[in-house]
Image 1 (cartoon, rainbow, N blue to C red):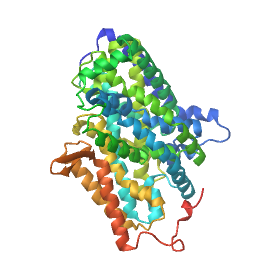
Image 2 (image 1 turned 45 degrees about the vertical axis):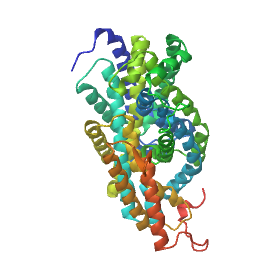
Image 3 (image 1 turned 120 degrees about the horizontal axis):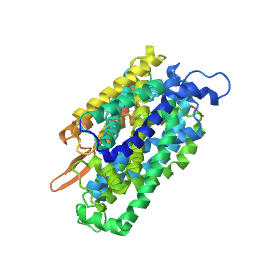
Length: 503
């Protein structure tokens, strides 16, 4: 390990203060939370439902930061600007994906919440088992959630490690620091910890981003000069618009697949199921597009880095190096704390969501054990640590997209399963197997890239591997359903489980 330079002492001090203050507030929430509630309150860690879903009592304000905050992670602040820095406008695919996903939340998630509340379900796999009465399909959905969330948590660990390295440390310390802080924060606080500190995280990121998009362009001569310099450094598109001809289809398919996958992950669904009502979810869906505006500003940090003369061989260091170059040490430390907390909070929800799958669906006989859920969450974080060590993706953002390939295979059972279609469990299971195997095999063949080229002769186009695998899954599922039972039953023959009827 290299010692931190003395000039970074103030920045390190500011970083440590905000980072550990947030962990302290989150991990002690169970002691002071009863002071703000009436009546007898169960400790936040007495029961697994409290530890893993916050008692299903989060209102619109907390749900706003818990659900919307999933869009402000290390994925947003580290990985998206890094991709923009390397590829230009292509990295902005994260913007249309968030625009697409909000109507999806409004239309689908209140229905899933109602089913979960009426049936006492805590996970996507719970809902699928109740709908299709298949233990095997339940395990398949749970396994998808577990595997998909590992590279996503790994991305958050990379985010924390990145800012620690930017402060002047190297070697194994940054990764050890990231892992231990995440493990302690999740173990002690449960879902109440990120629910509380998501507000702190978002406010800090707002301050950092608004300062960056205001001060950095002024320092660099304005937005016009910034775009002009960035254009000279980025690969030429060879067309009259910001996207190259070969980037249009990948851009569109990555945005679409990311939108479909966003709220299938265990952590995003955990935030939804923790809400106290279906109307709470609808209210949040109406206002969540505000996050897209800030996301676009964050993505532009990748262009600002070119104008600031940032040159780095590690794309993940683009934003930290930009902040160090432009801001005074103390404010750079504050921004780094915002990024680290922006990774810590969602990573905790991810681990909790995955732990819920283990305790409710893999080991259902232990589902009321909070201690078992903690151990399961810790095991998930160990798996994410292994992803950091052994998945050598070119861009950190690829880790999130690889998780999307896997979680998309739950779409037919979870979302299409809400439709009045006769899709038997064996057909869904076969579609899941073929879609998952196809997606993972293509990713492996393409060097862990989330895009696969298809075509014949002289024509070839790159398509999101997740969307391609999902298409295979749906074709297999619907084809088998037609052969087994017929896809469209008459209204008189259709039986909808009681928990799916109405709200």
